[in-house]
Amino acid sequence: MASAKYIFVTGGVTSSLGKGIISSSLGKLLQARGFRVTIQKFDPYINIDPGTLNPYEHGECYVTEDGAETDLDLGHYERFLNINTSQANNVTTGRIYHNVITAERQGKFLGKTVQVVPHITDEIKRNVFLLGETGEYDIVITEIGGCVGDIEALPFIEAVRQVKWDVGPNNFLNIHLTLVPYLKSAGELKTKPTQHSVKQLLEAGIQPDILVCRSEHHLPNDIRKKLALFCNVNINSVIEALDAETIYDVPLLMRKEKLDERVISKLKLSHKQEPDIEQWKEFLGRHKNPTSEVHIALVGKYVELPDAYKSIIESFTHAGAGNECKVYLKLVHSEEVNDENANQLLGEMDGILVAPGFGERGINGKLATVRFARENKVPFFGICLGMQCAVIEFARNVLGLEGAYSTEMNPETPHPVIDLMEDQKNLEMMGGTMRVGSYPCDLKKGSKAATAYGKTKIKERHRHRYEFNNKYLQAFEDAGMIASGINPETGLVEVVEIKDHPWFLGAQFHPELKSRVLDPHPLFLRFVKAARDFKYSRES
Image (cartoon, rainbow, N blue to C red):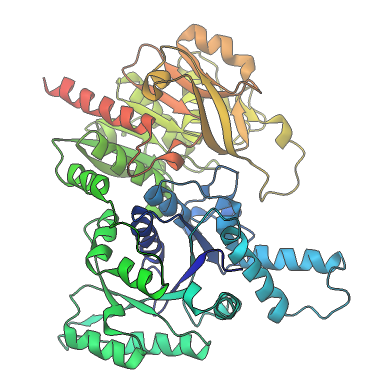
């Protein structure tokens, strides 16, 4: 069973400490040493996946190549490691129970009483080993969502305890991420929250091998000694994780703390080469020392929670570094934009992106935003619903199709320029039924999209139910909005552009899901370059 080594990252004291970033950073360092690494996330909530969750609840829903709707941490895994994840990389309590109950209904337990132990824990372990037993990976890192002590997480923690006995101590490692708060009134760091968190983990039968301690202040040696003594770990396994200027600093900080060396030692891994992170350092150099800057508006309806647009925001970081350009994002709530105040809110921007989303709330603001960008020749990028808004606005204000709309917002619209896809019309289940995953697209030679990609055949990830209505395609192209990207199998319009505009492009797919730290997405690269060119043209 131990064809791979298994690392489990648990968290204590509080949520949002950054287990995903620590997992990704460790994965990056091990990968840079030549090991084959993958990361998976176990989420304790009962939803089958985050596909039906409001972004305010859980941030963005990240989509994999194979069409899995997953936790946003998988985006970090892919961006840091430059790999593709899959359905197997994200598992929820809901999926675990669904699988077990389905098996029970099929009679696979031969009349046994189905219980949390062993049936639920066995199903959790089956998913743990799914990636490790393929032979594709040397190391599988598993992040356990939530905090130790949460009721929902108990079956996962018990399963982790059992894994150690299944694979043996040399193939198992627990990294416990915790908080060492600084009390300003006392003027000192406090170790007690970490001690209590480790105590809860010990009560569940797991002795942490490494402590990663988040803190706003450096951990002096006496604090490290105290944590080592009372948490029963080696002092060199107490790792300091200070707040970083950017998440992309964390691999270098963890390297400085020798986290990867401790992991290699404890798992008795054959010592491969020193980590090759020169390209990563070059990226950070470009990111932190830009030669120019642009201001771009991100217009959406979930801007109060930036995690709702996590992949888009990170894509701008990658593309900014690729252009040696600092991208300052202004998050604009689409409900606040209208034709009268668009210039006031957006007039100083060098580029405008209209974000994805669902539902009618904020749609009028997105339409006003598109109109402002189109009429004032401001570089524009629309993603998914943002692309659909570009189509609706063009239909109304250029083609003169009064009342043109999407049937998502108005099923009775006289001009359904955006309509429900045919295979979506008779669905009763909302979860897991959208057009998701990777699909091919053919780009028109000479188009802005083809120029950006440097090729005419691409594959991109989707997550939508509605599409451009091809009945109107000829009218749009005659008026200057061309379909520059088409799905070769279905004829679905994937990309639209306006000919007589410096850079106006809408994509039905989600390019942000394929942007990587060391491989920025070509559309974001070109959009940032167009914004910089626009800025220079205004200043000259």
